[in-house]
Image (cartoon, rainbow, N blue to C red; front, side):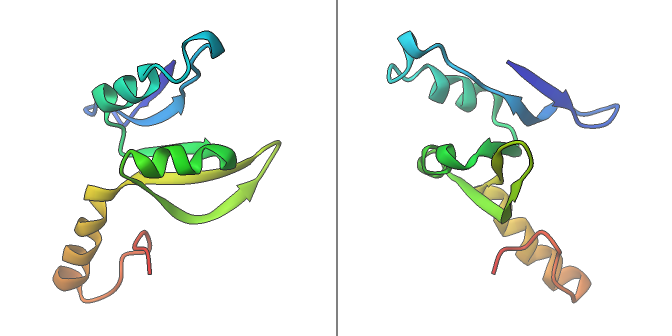
Length: 98
C-alpha cells in the first residue's frame, strides 16, 4: 500500500494503491485500512466504485480510460465544502458535483 503526500506539510491524502490478498478479502481488512488512512481522494478501478460508495465516497467527474478504466472518488463529507466555496466566491467550484 502506498499513499502520496499532499505537498510539503500534508499527510497522505490521496490513496494510490490498496490491494488486499484474495485470501483476506471479505474480512473487512480493506475497510479498516481505508477508515484508518481516510484519504480525501482515491483513483479506483471502475469495478470497485460500488465498494467505495458503500464506504462514503462519491464519484468525481467521468471515468477515464488509460490502461484500465478508473474513476476518481472523493469523501462524501468533503462535498459540503464545495457549497461553501460557491457561497464565499460566488461561482461554482470546478470540483462540485451536480
